[in-house]
Image 1: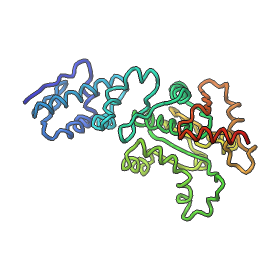
Image 2 (image 1 turned 90 degrees about the vertical axis):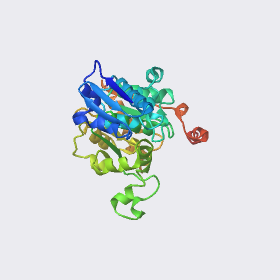
Image 3 (image 1 turned 180 degrees about the vertical axis):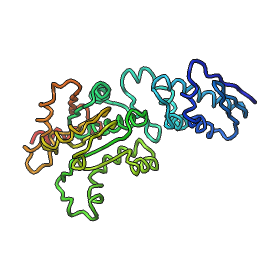
Image 4 (image 1 turned 180 degrees about the horizontal axis):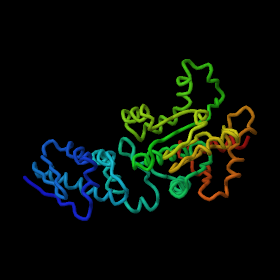
Length: 316
């Protein structure tokens, strides 16, 4: 069977990509089809069912092109990843309006803003280049921030993701752990790896980290850097001094997005008064372009016991 698809009212290169890179990637998923792109016309030859499916994929790409400036290989791959077809065709308007779905996990599970403050965090990140997300353990601050960063990378809104934490032990001594500095720090940074592993396939994540597209490092490694076109997350910021917080915030370069997450009730510094998070928040609270989202116990999305545990410890 034969079929011709005409790309009307759209620049064909938007669908084909430079040097037909995207078109060739799409066609590689249909070994039984002969596909040729000439100008605004796509000529297909093969089984009818596959021709129809190919045309459906082109329609989905056109719809997606209406929602973003440039299509990428991620958009092609998502067409063939189960539930992610919904994402590539465009998140349903009701979900988009509510700010619910951020992206889809490796298994096709929708990663959503589930609570009012998570939804507010998503909307504030679209309006402001610097967002503080403050609140108790289990409220989804870090996970939501990383989901937003991965979405921005997939949409080519930024060139890299940088995740950082202050290297402060939570009741344990890093020096007693075996190995070099990286070996000692990796367990401390594991929650960040875990979140990324939910959202990016393992091989691609490894490649991104080897290429420096995704970087995970202690806060001290940020000194002296200017972070352009990056989505940068400072996690566990309650363990930073005021000077460290200032150092981090002043790393912001052009076209950068920063999110700072922290729980003022879980300070691991020897002297809790040394924490500069809340003092820093008050200093910048009235600056335009900075948003502050304060989570509460009602936002805790872990096991139901976590809320009761937080309540119990607050009574001490």
